[in-house]
Image (cartoon, rainbow, N blue to C red):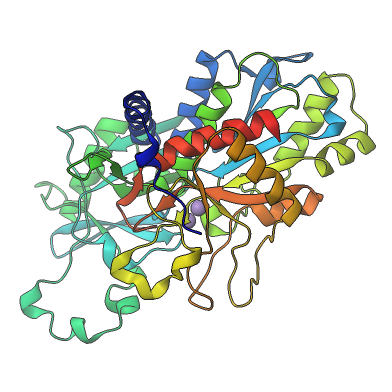
Length: 456
Ligand code: MN
Ligand code: MN
């Protein structure tokens, strides 16, 4: 039962729409290289669509649009429906953090006339992929006086970039004998940020010169690193890939491609939907959904409570009923089938680039451990919704049985007793500095998520 390639079904007009969406997505991705930037960009777009900050809204009625900003690192959008909230919300939820290298709290040092920033990698990375490529620094420095300085270095064409060195092939005999998991070790991921000494400095002359630049350009002292969140990410913009421009290569498709599909699907809901629609963009998924901005925190539940309060229907019991009655797509990328690594997949149950938005009934590893196994009845209803809206979709597992595995935010939302299933865009080279998606799959995801919001 093979699914068809969505491109074969497109009219000229469809291809134009797919292309336009690809352009908007690349612009979003390029402005959203960290969870903070992604939150800011999403709110900027939402405000243009008439969404208001829930904190500033005293009462709500059907058709109203609001957003909740969680510490500047996560965001939820809501459209109030005509049905009572106790009947549940239609939720689409993705994550907006991506694997990267986080600058340590005491990072700056000098060795052999080179200045470095020491890092601790974030999320699952093949460390050897992060050397010998241009990196940019994105982040926020919180100063003692309460002000914050936002930093982006390495994205403008005239900016300098930073980077991590690799050993030259001529001397790599020993290195190449090592296992790939240790060929570059975590502590070796230190970013080179300078090599020019400050003449008058007493010691650590290169480090001193870097500090002088930071002071001059950003007003930052060495001690300010103690209260900073600076992320080293691949420098440069996302681009079309393939001679046919059918794909996009970029940093952070996992999971901003689903985040953006959600945002467009929400914006495509016009007027008042039947059930209240909700788009969740969560932080910290790549390290286990922990912390105050990760999905395990209670901000989503609290936001629903605040919304019920503004709609005049809050009680503890009504809130419990609303959360349990929800229907949700946990929107996260899926492993795209890769013919070069065929042995990692089981072809009948793999997601193929171009064959549409993917549903994963379960993920997990070693006997589905750690997965959210969605109900057959829910998947049955979704098939009807997707077919009804003409959405190209496919189903997949994350690789062959016992090959590995992974999780998403699905199991956390399932704790409320709601119906939830994983659904996302297939990705090649997932978690690599440059990942690849098909524009057709993004297009089908937007269509599928919108159909879900309107019909689930
Ligand atoms: Mn993900
Ligand atoms: Mn991931």
